[in-house]
Image (cartoon, rainbow, N blue to C red):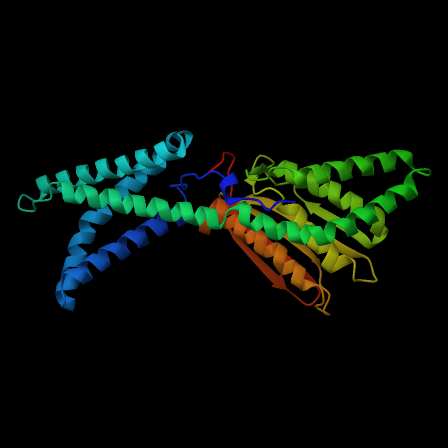
Length: 338
């Protein structure tokens, strides 16, 4: 199979309403202001005075620019990427000019009217920040993490397929309807795995895929696999990264159920709280620790995709207790793409 190319994933503007994006812009611009002040004077006291003076103007215009970019983000993202970049830069230029003009009227002796030099500086900084987000998006793009996921699936998929087909064959004569349903689930699962999974997916769909996967594993493991779903408060219209839940459940089966000699229970708890979506998966913990390398590969892939879609607004935490292993994912509750 040819390796996915980064170019297959189109560039897009950052989500200007995202807390992580705002924080990166604020810190980046402040870093540039500090560097400018540091280069203009050799004395610390003067440098600090310049930094504070520059920051008053820069932060006022920057905060107002972020507000306008957040309000107009959907309109900008509907444009082709190049035109969206131009629109964002012009919006930053216009906002900065308005702030400087307002301050020049507020402080009569400030001389804050924008010149061609300030205009070039605003456009250059805007281009630099947008270029950073473009490179960051490509670095976190599924085009890169998908290769790691496929490497993991290449090892697991034949084993899972072989066991599933054997389980189906054992049911063909005794329970043909159940065998037919298992084959349908298997086909659906592989169709999803092989599909283009770059866009966010409804939570309801991810739960359905996960149920189909666990039903197939139930054919093989029987009473050893017990699954408890707490999803009464789960918003089915919430958008999540595709194939988020199923790999976590695959890990729970592989690391928590298969090595055990006694039946084990996997619990899935999904709920919404204060504008956030929580996904908690808990499975039995085996103390031998022989299978947790693959677990880290899958979790690393999920972390990358959470960062790609939600930046610092999402998190993934793991906990190990005496008798269970838990994964807790928190992400923004969204019903429209960022």
